[in-house]
Every structure is written in structure tokens, then in C-alpha cells.
Image (cartoon, rainbow, N blue to C red):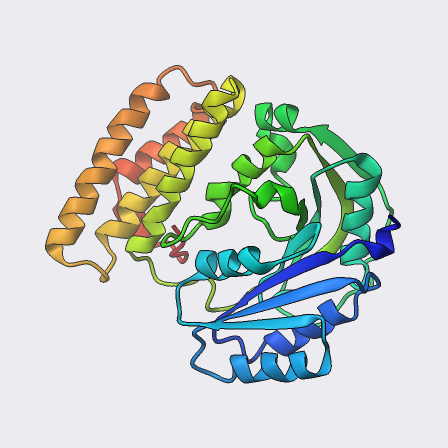
Length: 326
């Protein structure tokens, strides 16, 4: 089968995205690879998102729209996975957009290298326009186990499902965890584990729009603690694959994250005193557990250790930081 004959499912969850969804869809429908199944999931939007999507579907038979009550990003993606028919899958957030050659390039990388996952670089932007970034077509294919053993290869590509293409077979037994945020961090290592190898491109083909409503910019709440569940899942995957170096790195990141959260939790107005006390105890217990694990961790020393301990023992530091991220 020629590449242009391969069906690719593009999954776009959308919630109150009336300002962004049209431009996102314009960049998807104008892809150089035209054999697409575009599934937009209107996740209980209260604005005109659903109407805009329906109008696009009326004019392009490749677009399917699912309307459902608000269940969150994971449930929206899962709803699309349950009905998709593509041999390959690309996930795009409704406020992001893609280069015209995004699908064609990532699909070719998968096919040419017998990879179940391909990835490109993403550009953070606050502008809604495509840039003339050029392409060098340089790629690198890495075995999944090698990638799990040295997660530094993922640094530029982030632990997200956006800016990547996946073989549909990877999702036969996998779904996004419903009810938590940081779902990408939770699932990405499980996807890599199931893939034979992953091909990376040095080209920037995905545009990540810096929305003021993103999780990173939103107020700290109990949902931000979901990142701990993502770390626990990563550790499970790395342990069963014997990836000691990566485990040490993740444990170092984990304790640092817990220390930061203590300050964010302490000064957050989004918790009752009882709830805050309960969550604070859980963070303290987790910090003590991780302190023992990180005792001889080569990744947890020097500045990293100093900053982590300062954040933990002097949580007021976070009160005066501009960021409210988890």
C-alpha cells in the first residue's frame, strides 16, 4: 500500500474552543496527506464550539463530530479511539495547529523505519499563524528499550502525545486514564514500552498555542496533585523493564515535584482546612518515602538537592513565585 492510501485518524478533543477550533481544523483539513479521518469530540462545550465543528463536518466528509457531556480530555480522546478506523493516529489539541506536511512527514517516518511511533519538535507560540521554519528532514530511530533506559532522548520532545503519530495497534489495550489530568505523562511510557522503536525528526511541525486557560497557567487545585499518579505509573513501567538509570532520574524529579507542591498547597485558597491538612500529610509522607529512595541517587545531589530541600522546608518560597503550575 502506498503511503497516500493509508488512513490516518486525527483526534481533536475540544472544550469551549470557539476562539481556536476553526484555525486548528483549517490546518488539519489542508494537510498534504489527504486520506484522513478527523474526529472532533465536543466535550460538553458551553460556547459555539460544537456548532463550528458541525459546520466544518457539513463541508468536509472526512470530519466526524462527537457531542458528549463534559468528561475531560481523557474521556474525549477515548471516545474517539473507540470509533476510529485509521491505521495510524495523531492527537491534536483544539487550540494548537500543525504544519501542512505534519501528517505526511510523521507517517513516512513510521513506514520507512518500521516504527510504531514517530515524533517531531513543537514550537511554543502565542501567535495563530504558521511560520516558515524550513525542513532538514533529519531523523533518528531509537529502540524503545534504549529510550526507556535513557529518558534524556525525550527531553526535546516532551512526555506528551501531541507532536507524535502512533500506530493504531498501540491502543488496542490502552486508553487514557479518566478523571485525572497529566494524562499524557501517565500513558506515554506505556506507549513507548509497546512500540518496537520510535523515530524522531529534527523538524518543527507542531505549534503549541500558549493559551491563558492551560493547566500550567491555571490556579493550583487538587487536580494538580494528579501528577503524582503519573510519576507512580512511570516508575511501574521503568521497574518492569529494568531501567535503573531512568528510575533514578524520575525519582529525583518526583521528590522535587513533591517539594514544590507543598508550597503551592500551603498557600492555595482552593482547599478547606481539613482537605489541606489531609493533602499536606500525604505530601509529607511521600517526601519522606522518596528521601530514603533518593539517599544515594546520583541525580539527586548538588543544586537539585539544595533547591528541593529549600522548597520543602521553606514552602513560603512558592508563595512569592509567579508560576502556579503543579
